[in-house]
Image 1 (cartoon, rainbow, N blue to C red):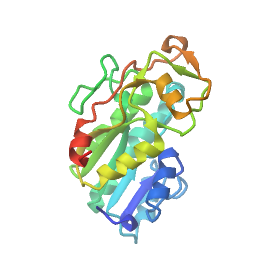
Image 2 (tube, helix red, strand yellow):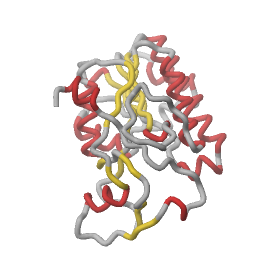
Image 3 (tube, helix red, strand yellow):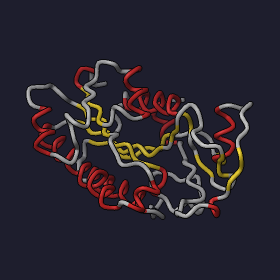
Image 4 (spheres, one colour):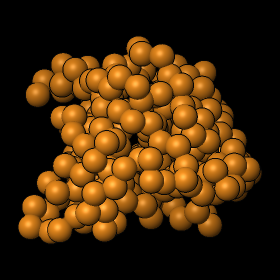
Length: 239
């Protein structure tokens, strides 16, 4: 395992970053003003003089509805920005961990394993898949496909007809750290058992009243079942 003092985490102000800051406090957590993934020269300047042997790349434009309205921003951050991170890791021979999404799959069958064909159904997912393509050009890399949310469900209603492997960010963060310690490369799926988003929301706070909503009730397209087969994760980590 790379020492914490030699790990850089992009996107440290996000949900996942908050967990990593607690679990791995000695990593580099630059702000977007210091390490803007769309500004390659700025990233190089931040790296200069530091010993960084691993980058966990979590910085992203993550809202599917916003990506539909602002595809250029998704392109710039999730594809061009990720390509910049890959290029920087190549130059410094640093290991790269890329945080991707279960939304790269069509969502018509669920229980997706790492080798299953990908086919995003919205622009956010296409942009994350574009990032995966850049990462796959670098052998010393690991793509983590996952899905997580805050410890408190942020909406009043949840989908009863969308299936997922989503868990709280604290659970997924711990799972990621365990896998990263193995120095594995390639692609891995990290998540919990298959459930509806409604069931996931209720699991966070069983006493809370959560309303039901259908994917048919929203004005942007989402995949129906992106539950993940996590056999590789458990085989490698030994759990």
